[in-house]
Length: 402
Image (tube, rainbow, N blue to C red; front, side, top):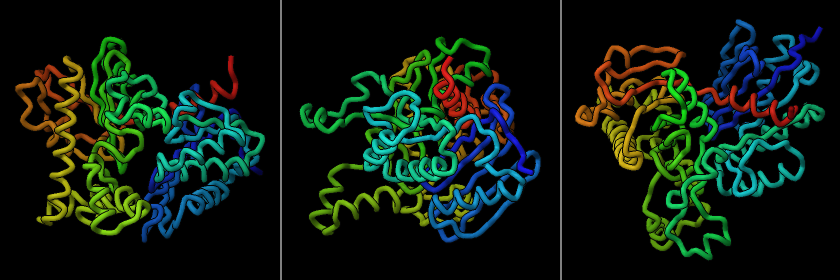
C-alpha cells in the first residue's frame, strides 16, 4: 500500500552540480523526507536519502540532473512512497533567474516554463537544471500545483546605484542588463532567522550575509532591505566559487577571443565550469581543497588564499556601505561547516569590533549559533539556511491563496 503524505510540499532545489529535495509540512515544519544528490556530472556522484528516520547513501554515476531525479524517485519507491499517488499539496521549485519577468513566487504553466528556458543564458549552470526538475516533476504530477520561487526576487528592488552597470544606458535597457543578484531565498531566510535568533527586530539590524557553497554570494542587508549583493546579471560575478571565476576583468574575454582564438561558448564554459577553485587546483569540493592545503599542496593553498582574498575584500566593502554592522552571518555548505574559512575571513579585524571565539567556532551543529566572543561589538553567527522551508511556504501561499 502506498504511504500517504497528504498536505505536504515537495521542494526541488537543483543547483549547478547538485539536487536537493525535501518533503515537508510547511506549517509544522516537519520534514518527512530529505535528500541531496551531489557531484552531478562528475566521475563519482552520491545521493544521501533520508525518509522518516531511515537513511541511505547511494554512490555511483549521475551524468545529469534527469538521472539524479530518476534515482531519487526510485529511492522513494523503495520507502513505499509513490510520489505520484501520495497526496502532495504542492511542489515548490527553486529557479535561479527570473529576469525582469518574475520577482514573486509564480504558479508554473507552459508560458512560465518557456520564459525560464529563455532566461537560461543568464544562469547557464542553473536555469537549465531548474527546468529539468520542473519538467520531470510536472510530467509525474500534472495535477499538483507547481510554483517557481526565484533566487533573484529578494534583490529586485536593489538601489539603482547598486543594480546599475556603467554601461551605455540604451544598450542596458534594451537587453535588460542590470544586477539581479542570486541566492535571494537563502539570504532572506537567513537574515530573518538571524533576527529571530538574537530576539531583535528584523528592521533594526544591519547584516552581512555570506552564502558560501559551490556557488557563493554575499549580501548587505540594511534594516531588512538588501542594498547590495555580489552576484550580478548572472551568477558568475562576485566571489570565487567552485567552478566559476567570480569577478574578472572583462578585457580577459577580448584577450582569449583575439589571441587564444576561443569562441564565446568556449569562454562561457571556461568561466562557468572550469574556473574558480577547480581551475586553480583541479578540485571544486571545498573539503578536498582544505585537506590538500593542510597537506602542503601549493596549488590548493593558492586556491584557498585567492578565495579568502575575495571574501575579505567584500566584507570590507559592505562594512563601508552599511556604515554600521550588527551581524556577520555564515551559511550554506562551506559557510556552515568550514570553521577555518570563518576564522580566516575575519582574522585580524578586532579593531573593527570583530572577535571570533575559537571554541564556539569549532562547534558543529545544525542549529543557529553565535561564534563571536561576548566582547565582540559585531555579532558573528552561523545560521543554517533552509531554502526548502522558505520555498514550501511560498509555494503554499501561491497555490492556496487566502
